[in-house]
Image (tube, rainbow, N blue to C red; front, top):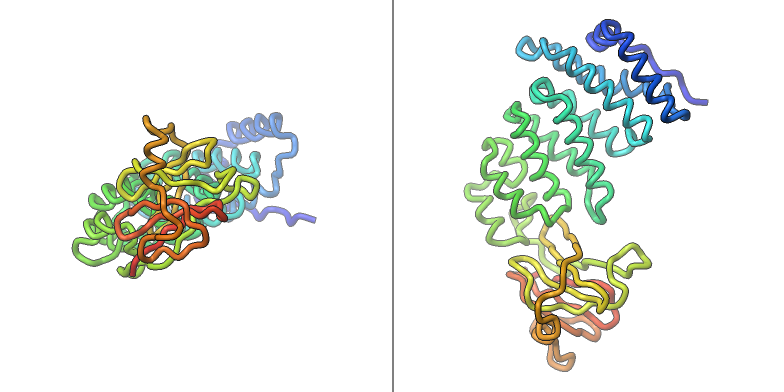
Length: 323
């Protein structure tokens, strides 16, 4: 049996009372579209997640006037998320950890800030290999510096954190955004060393968490039947950009991106001369490059400090990173 929701008190209770008719009408509308709406879950979300955020806004004289707008925006978003059964797991944890801490930015743009936090966690939770709880922890640490009071700065920090939490394809944009962040938040997200952003641009295998290079073998991709992209062991091709390689399984083409924080695979059109691009990356199994020690290697491409290699017996692209 589900426990009843605790009563809502404080600043949020005042907002809900002042907007009683509008709130009741909105709940009735959502319940009509979602007859299985769990009102107890919604009540707990209001008490446990929305009320603390509204109290944080109310506690600061500079943001107290925004309490009604913040309360109603979070009420409506929480209701929609509960109806869609999405205010759980990493989204629930992100709301609990971030909304009260983000009160200054939330007061300026409640729908944008809360919605962006939600969308970021959902995107990370659905991306193979991404780590939504790490994203929440990184953003929480950046918020703790007290420098992300502007919504634009907070959203920029969120994009940098998404790269750090496994979204390797975000790396170029994330580093540009990191360079423009307040120094304290930037130090949390990419490291405190002077020139950290430039160093990370130059070497994708530097780990922002340690300042050292992540060395070893990084496997990217898998058989499509196991949730991967490749129907057959892939072959690499010449033509990817910096820190990127092209790969094909014979049926489709993919851009493969990897760095110290994570990896990503995205479908792309084939190159103009696909046969030549594959031939240029072909590897002689009897004479592999130094450092390549995989069974039945088939193709390879140098990618900065790494060598990307494929094997006839694997559905992955392996990045061999020099120490």
